[in-house]
Length: 319
Image (tube, rainbow, N blue to C red):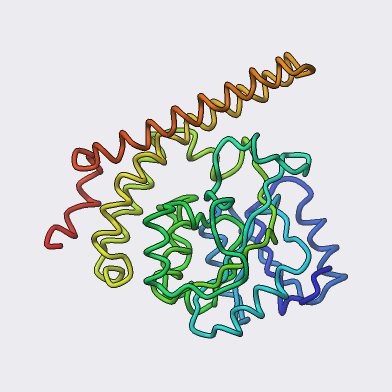
């Protein structure tokens, strides 16, 4: 509500919560008439609840975020202005600030993953990227687009994508932002205007922690990209690259979780207090990144041998 560009409406879906969420939300509704409050009688899950909110939305743009993430000052003013300046673009994406569970910024050297490699993105001013330019950039930087709390979509683009796909779990964010950027183009704002909370028990982290769960969901994501209604959006060559990228992503997720737990436990058990401590922790981080680099190269080398489920392959054999 403190944003310089006030929202047309805020839609809150309570997914059959058992705490005092309803009481808190109802108090907000009494103060802010623009809030629309929907309640699920039984727990339906994140994607179902998001689709219910989309169906109730009447505005031109959609922004979806988790309850523990933050929207920083100026986000809506700049994102809405960018989409109005470039009316063909389907989505606006900004840089992301990463915070811990207390809301403190996470220094780049402490991040367990070089999220989206955004420090290597050589874009200095807000700009439009046409679909071909997005494909070219994704060849060099596969994690340039990572979904998360950053995208502001045109409402019709999300409807065209089929809304949030429950079978993909947290990877529906990845699918939707890529669908929007590859079909309609995107606006990129090189400024952190949202904050993502790195949460050990979060929806996305829970799925990526288990490589077998990640493999199942990412396999379904590949199958969805190969469906007839999406073939024109996701080229066969793009999907083939994603097969090795997704293999890396599924395996690296468990490594990231283990490394993050190690760092948290080490900081608690043996708080760093000297240059030797900092050097040792730096070495741990360097080895972790080196191991992931080797894993990435191995996944690309084995790209022809990766065995995703047949359901993700059969529908695209003729390509």
